[in-house]
Length: 251
Length: 260
Image (cartoon, rainbow over all chains, first blue to last red; front, side, top):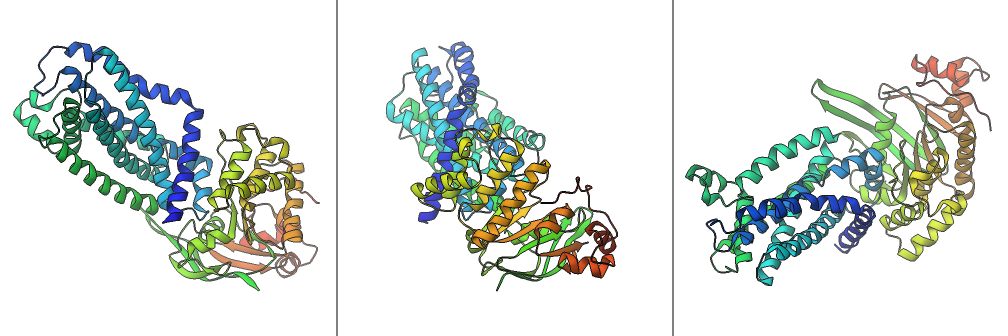
């Protein structure tokens, strides 16, 4: 176990350095959520959205989950290029833990997403968001859990495909309906009953509801607890499956 | 004393068109300190065999012991004792030479100060000192190849696996690399397992040649022995000998012959 932790830290630091070297990538990753915040958020100001809090407390959690969902889902694309460069194969011949090869990358993605989430929340506060600090921190926790889940699966998938052309369509075909059905943009309770029912089969909905409840300071209405259960279950299943697929793919 | 032994080593790939037997039972022994040339036409099973011996691909049949560790039961033990240099290399172009070397040392669990010292030592040995702080993308083909080999040597492996090490190098680069490989054996007693398309390279470097074809060993022995036995005379070219063994030329064609 100590080797796994040390190896994970090594892989984490390597990828963190790479990310810090490519600051434009970090900045561009923020463009889409900030555009939603600046150009979409004001449209809903003052409109009753059916939740407990105001419109910013509804929109910002959705944007955070959206940021986590899309960034983590596409995280694996980098590994396709690493495979082509031979870096993955070089590492696989070393005694480094296979789990660390996955988790070092995933944890770097978590840190990157959390930094971006902080920026989004700071901009949102400047635009009018008011939310309790504990609620915001709980929200970040859910973003981290979502990132662990989706990034693990993304890397596992990327190990099994040869090109970005084989990777992106799979991710898009999963994330787009998941985003629409999880109530990221607007609460699903605003829609027709069938849509609301359908969205209950999408686990990300519970995370969005949980973050919204946390941002509204509703810690006791069960949504946060349910989101915790879903996030933990999702992360456990995704990491187990991701690690298995990652190993089966030759890692 | 053998450092690699295989018995019936086999690998079958499942494809949509049915199973493909890439390696059909390789029995091989490589002695400590030996430079073994592993030859064969494209698709003969060279790279698949090498990937199995380096733990990159699990065998579907047979057994193997590498550097005293059973390939199936203790792949991590094998990994600690071998170095591997892939045909395409394996460096990140955005990372500096020093960082790649130090990270590689850390992947083999060298403490940070030791990894740093080893990076400097290898840079001196492989003429990379001036390049330590350059990004790998700025290296020439020959420099990149020397770095690939340095990465394979970071942990002082007992066995170095080289997959087509001189592909893409100019004659001077090939000559330098041959000298380096000879030096590894002479100075460190390292065992080198080398796959190559270039018969002059195999002839010049290897103590013993193993020719594989269609997933099986077609011939093995010293270059002289193979030339006599299959080429008809000790003066036969290795190319003629290879054609006599496999019925095919090596592919791609050898570059201009090089003698060092």
